[in-house]
Length: 329
Image (cartoon, rainbow, N blue to C red; front, top):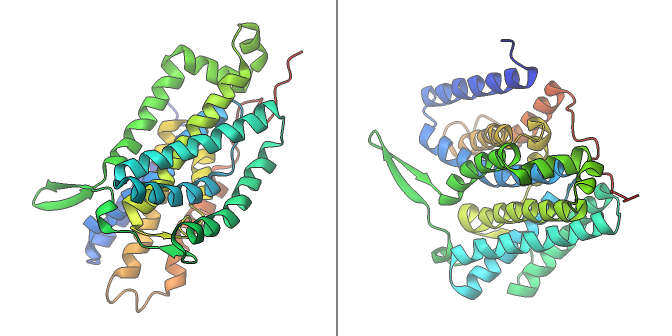
C-alpha cells in the first residue's frame, strides 16, 4: 500500500530525529538531557495543537494561542502562590484559558467576528496585558521568580541505570491526543464536531446547535492551551517573564497545519518541534560546543525547523466551513 505524502514526511522526521539523537550521543552532549528537554518543550505544543485541532474540526479557528500561553502562564503562577500549590496553579491556568476561549467563541460564533482578526487581537492584547499583570501582581517589571516549592513536581524514572525526569503533564499531553482521536472518530459527539466544520447545515437540520458545538470546542481548545501555558511557568521554567512564550503559540499552529487536524499526528509534530528546541538547548549548555557554535544560530533551530517542514508538506485540506460564521437560513 502506498504511503501518503504526509505519513512519509512523518517517518522521515522520526528517522532524522533518531539519527540526531545518535549523533548527539557520539558527541557526548547527553541524550538523557536532550530527551527530557525535548519532552518538556513538546508538552505545551502538544496540548495547544490538539486543542486547536478539535477547535478547527468544528469550524472555528483561533490563532491567538500565543496570547493564551502568555496570559495563563502568569495567572497560573498567581493562583499557585495564592492557593499554595502548583497543581492548583495548573488548574487555574486551564480554567483561565477556558474562559478566554469561551469569550473568543461567543464573539466569533454569535458575534460573527472575523476569527483571524479576533485571534491576532488576542495576541496583541496579551502583549500589553502580560507585562501589566506581572507589574500589578508582583510590582516588578517584566519578570517574577516564584518559590521553588510551587513547581509542579516531576516524576523520576529509572531505565537501565539511567534516571529520566518526566512530568505528569507530559504524560497527559501524550494521552490527550489519543483520547481526542477516539472522540473524533468513535463517538457521536465527534461526528457532530466534524460535521459542524464540514457541513454545518446538516448539523442544524439534525436538531443540533452549530453554535453550541463550536463554542464548546473553542472553550476546550483554549483550556488545553491554558494548561500548556501554565505548565511553561510552573512545570518547566520555574519563573515568569513577559517573553516566556517565545513564539511557541505559532509553532503550535504550525503543528496543527502539519497534522491536517489529526490529533495523533499533531502529537508527532509537537514532538519533532519539541525535540528541535531540546537539541538547541542541549547545544547551548554543553561545554566546548557553545563556544564554537554561535548562540543565536542555535536558538533559531526550532523556528527554522518549523519553516522547513511547513514549506515541505505543502497545503492541506481543512473543513469547508472553517472560519466561516454559520448563519441559519
